[in-house]
Length: 497
Image (tube, rainbow, N blue to C red; front, top):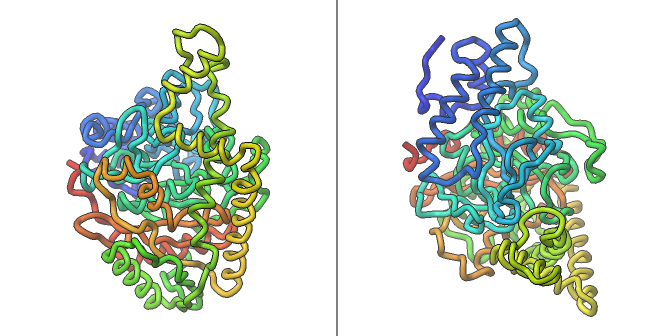
């Protein structure tokens, strides 16, 4: 059996780990312990993890090794492979905090659907990753457990809200991680951390066991080193779930079979370039790198078409009415009465509720609760929430119309590279503008992926590929073809030891 160092193991893809495990060159327990060692050594620099589940990881790895020794075949390509979960996904026996004081000591008695499916697939859970409180943020600066730092530059943010998951994969602390994307919270941190991040179609992956932020927008998706690994993870977690009424009974393709069969050509594929994705505020180096990536797609055989999505300029405002409104409703349950944190010093029930919510919610969550409550209040509902839902319909129709003439859309994931920690915390509008290219896909419910496509000042840039409803296969095909032709996704951060 070969002996790997934690550095050797850190940046293996799922496919590479699968080959080593199946050949017996490394045991699952050795692989798990190497990653746990790396987390212990490296994570103090990044703060990517809120909880490390070492015992659970070793037990799952030993179970794989026992089954392999008995001659059993791997359950799935993920069997025995170390990974992590964003700390908003319910996990049996492992603390789930949502980055909030409200749930500091919450240990769920069951697994949500996605963790349960991964457990059945043989995944080795290393721990839970840091995030903006209740997934509300674009920088992972809003967690009660401190700021997560970008592995490419520890003075900069990793993006958010799934910044811990993106940083964990970028820093080699697990081969993949699950995050959530409500307005770009998988794709934007994937861009800023130089990894691949996939947001499936709304309804493709069950939300049961996901602590809700905005229920009509939330979707679970993977961070991986490449698009092929993202396809492997999606195969394991996708599919209808009777416990989630919004999950759809749409067949789940074998995404990897199509990728295995491709030669990397995009001949005949129609690629749309939305004019609205190149607006004011985009960093020149980002624009240049993304346009170069689009040029590469043309060389791979794609037909490029200029298109327009006329209601895109209204998407950000629409999102920041709908999402806070749903957050206000979802977070009303954290009243200090039934579960979660409760202030020990209160004269009566009303005082208890006020003190509990004031102490246990952070500033950004309070801001969104107030925005959402206002938008839903009597006298303002029609002017704000109802109007936003009507505009959302127009945005979705824009995408339906444009997909009649193209197969995918491409553009930048984020208008800038990772910004310094603290640079935007006092300017909510500037922070919200980080999501300008990602929120439309959530409003429309379509799938999208971000893949690395270059650097500016040593910091990663992401190319975003968007597709038709439930057509993750084409989105992944484009991302995979681009990565076969380039090496940006193979670059590793200098900040990682």
